[in-house]
Length: 283
Image 1: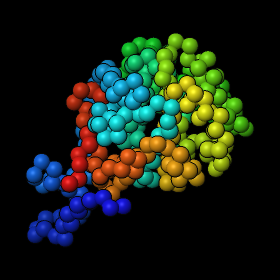
Image 2 (image 1 turned 180 degrees about the horizontal axis):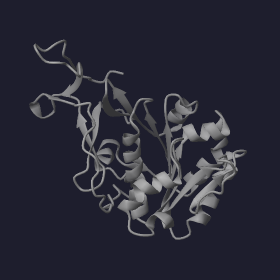
Image 3 (image 1 turned 45 degrees about the vertical axis):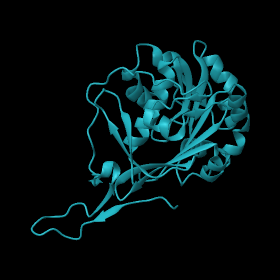
Image 4 (image 1 turned 180 degrees about the vertical axis):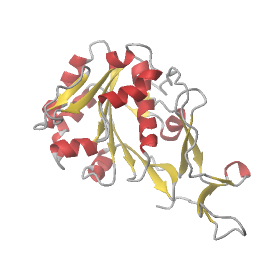
């Protein structure tokens, strides 16, 4: 793709076992720094989310200052696509979701979320609610859940996806009705692996009413996809912003297709009791 990638290969070390043969490295700051593929630090005691301010009236924060600087924030009434490589660890996906949901909810804004296939309302609450004041998650966040789990009732705060007509199930006016105390701009954060498993490969075309309503209200639409999702290419071509997160030899990198950016190593700092994205340019 024309982006610079620096790879250090270690063939052998005398008398020492080589556990990692390839390292992605950078010369950022005029020094050689390799990125370790071992898991980094973990979140200790969760702290309250300090909202990241918007860049302007039309550019809303992603909840990550580093990502805001890279792509210029989220453009209201536009589509954004975040594409995760198939081998990106769940922790990275969750941390970027936490930043988006926490920032919107902490600012009193509404969030409607279809979680990835391994996710649910309870799992989202588990990773998001500890960073928010009491009642904020319940007031500002709605999660779409399928009713295929043996006909179980959807939990409180969840919205039902019945599986026959996606435009009816995720109708934007219905979302607004269920978020009466939340402020605009709202965030529609939809995982396409889940949507395709419920509604089939043509789900993006069926979402035209939802996307049009989001745009009319000058809200935000973010689609989360993987290369395996049938909707990926179409969503990327419709999007005004498109970023990719990939696993390269065990190192996680993030880069923009729209706007086009160089490669950045993606890691997270937990020093402040929240997962804060750190982007290091590979130069």
